[in-house]
Amino acid sequence: MQFGLFYQQQMPKPWDDGVEVQHFANNLEQAVLADQLGFHSLWVTEHHFLEEYSHSSAPEIFLGAVAARTKKIRIGHGIRHTPPAINPPARVAEGISTLDVISKGRVEFGIGEGATRLELGAHYIGAKDKRAMCLEAGEQIANMLAMTPYPGWDGQYFKMECRNIVPKPVQKPHPPMWLACTNRDTIMLAARLGIGALAFSFVDPYESKQWVDAYYDIIKSDECVPIGHRVNARVAMVSPLSVNQDRATAIRDGYHCFNFFKYSLGATMRDSKPGHNNLWADYMVAEQGDTKRDLAAAEGVAQGDEYSGASGTPADVIKRMRIFEEAGVDDILFTIQGGGRPHEVVCDTLTSFAKDVMPAFASNRRADREAELAPYIEAALARKQWMPALSEDEVPIVPGVRNLSATVSQL
Image (cartoon, rainbow, N blue to C red):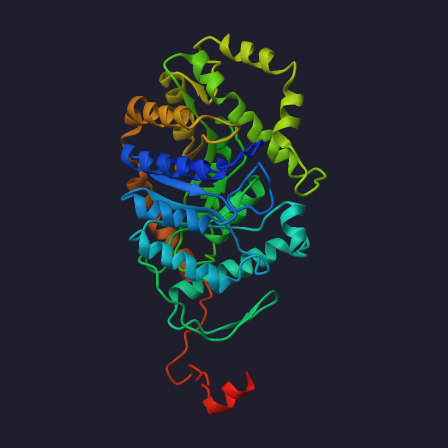
């Protein structure tokens, strides 16, 4: 099992001068530290117009900065919005390839459809169409990355003429693909598409085995027909994390980070007045009367079998991670930034986890799983209906300017 970090880039109000500059600078420092400590991956979501909850509206730029500052850590788009009205497919393909070149082949490519009215409504995307848009574009982005040239497309949600996407990614035929999953049905969909499942719901560790087993059952079945040019059979789950040698301190350090995450996520489904919301103030009002009770209950839990929290001592966290490992989860992505959590506390948590928890999971079972899956993946790729490549004679000639002086005079 491998460990990564997952960033929403939350920014609770008040927004004093310089707060966004410091926020991004802190996140970059944390990325460099995670790379040095041996974390496997760092993922950044993409959201638009979701004030306070997520200021990660241009993840490709942030991840480019991470790529330039790190050496080994995998760089994950978790996820890019692929409905063409939000991100034109060719531009996504160009961005993924360029990031893969800059990082020397470290990109993980997640696709997603979006969920909130604030995001989808701004682009006049209907809820009934968003998934079909996402998947149509996702498949064609894979074709753009893998084919020379891309033959072109005339689909339901976008059209494009034959062109050759450059640069091409370092990872051949393209970086591993993932799908944003918020429930069991979308995890099953990811399996049918032959791509990784990024489970963003906070799943009970004991329940995760059912999700993982169902995913891999489909990967091994005739239902799996890859959307891309490779199969990425993996299940990743998001989990909170707060580690300290003192359990009470760990729980206090992580409390608002995790609870504001859940509160602000719920707020994306409520009425909103752009530019005039104050989620943090609303959250603090909602917390009155609950915080002391919840903290007291959590701090009073004995270090027995009943303890399964994500915050606690290294022994507590190892115990929880063991449950995910035994369930067959491939990657755990920790959400550590949010709710005004201080940069120094985040860095201490990363350091403590790497020193006191990560060594307990040094064995890598992935090689055995890949060997087991190899014949099923081969069969899945054989079922795929590949986009026909164009022969040289079939590649259309794009006409150039015949009369330059006449064209200039018309400008």
